[in-house]
Length: 261
Image (cartoon, rainbow, N blue to C red; front, side, top):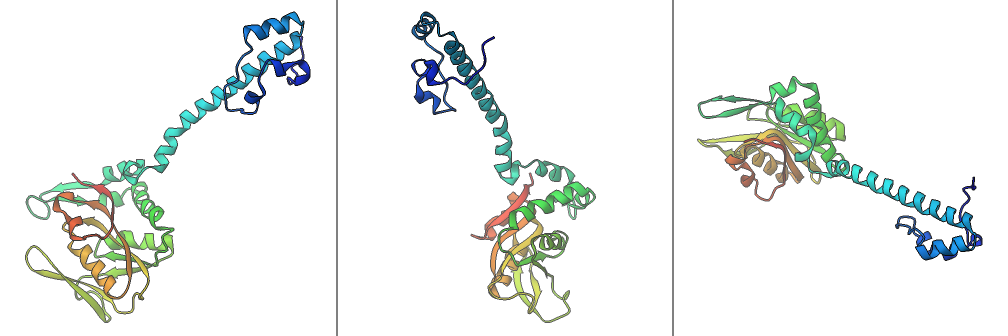
């Protein structure tokens, strides 16, 4: 049996496989031509011919396997690089949220997050998605809007090493407060924050469970900006697009996990 030695110029392979193809391992390596077969056979250089065939076959087989591996792994990379809306966790979070019709008044489709809180996996997925987005953004303040912003804000703040600042309705905070008034469908309301809770120049995000008309989020942003903070982004679990709350925020960035139908 012929030994499987590495082909070399000493065996006359320089006349069979061009050196230019040997120097590029990712390129297809040509098999010897009929003329080259005849030359090798006539010169009785069977070892050279055998090694040339083996080398070409082995190289092209390895290249084929490498190409197949790239094709298989590509969809996985696409999934990892995709936007959160394509993340498999989004579907789990969405399915865990219960919709209750005609609450708190007729015609309202209430997005009930309490069922999501009963699902530890979905709740963790929600927090993880926010943490992954903000962990490297140099955020020092996580401001949570009353009341369900208090559910999501503290774990996010702990995970990214920021402080949590509650933004509350009037009369709920015991110390000296600064407030921002905003309009409702019928009348007005206020958003309040303790004086001294934040410092000028800090970077903040505002967290709530849902954006509807955008009134409370807009007031929270204005309140933080009045005391010199840079609001990097507002973030909600759910958006009700038909109420156009995003428009009320103007050019302020908004990040949401789920857009309710």
